[in-house]
Image (cartoon, rainbow, N blue to C red; front, side, top):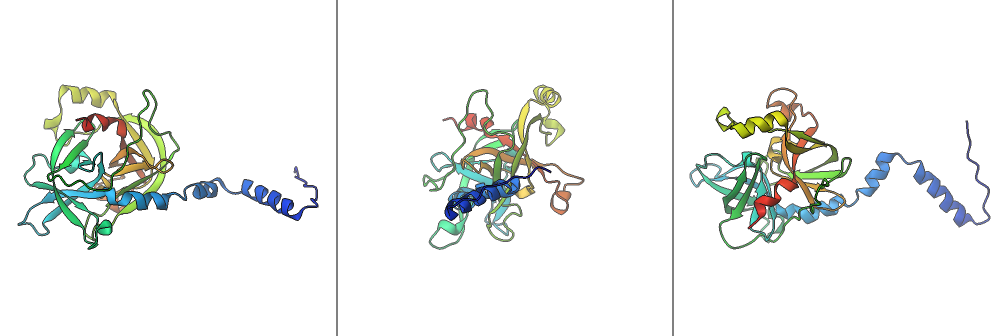
Length: 273
């Protein structure tokens, strides 16, 4: 066995520094990664007001707000991004978002009416717009696009934010942390056979849609929520689907630990004026 010998140092301070460096080198990789992610609590505090619950509203329903998924505020504070499958099709009720109350003086969540601005069923994305002219203060920034380069690298530390269990226990934000395990290509299944066009069938076969495969657990209520790169705090994807072990109910009882997100590059065209 090879041994590392260190000559005694007459300077006790220098010796302590040398020992500290040696101890740091022996720290497990996971522990060093944990130290590097100390910015996550700050990222959560900074982002939580921009992550909203998305659903339908009816004055005759009980409750009046029907939760369907998560969304997040971008741009000038009037646009909300979510997944297309979160929005009913056809629209039979008014759409609304529930804004968390942590930034309000009353501490109570706010219901705000929204309308569907654009929808991209191929990439399962939708952009909503506030009905009134009062923008939300908190917004999230999208990661900048570099032509030909992925917006996030495999192995990057990421966090998804949203409402995994809906609003049954109140508008309580939850954050899950993991890594980008793979950047892969797949095709989204159509909700119904009537949605299959010739183009959709061709893309199902070719798997032309890029996805971020995540080594982390998400739940049905997370659909439409932001995927943030912890290092930059920018949105790199939109949480889309979870790999199931069995039935749909197994997403809660026996989660697979594999989640997929739509890269933010597919969102940018929907935000154009």
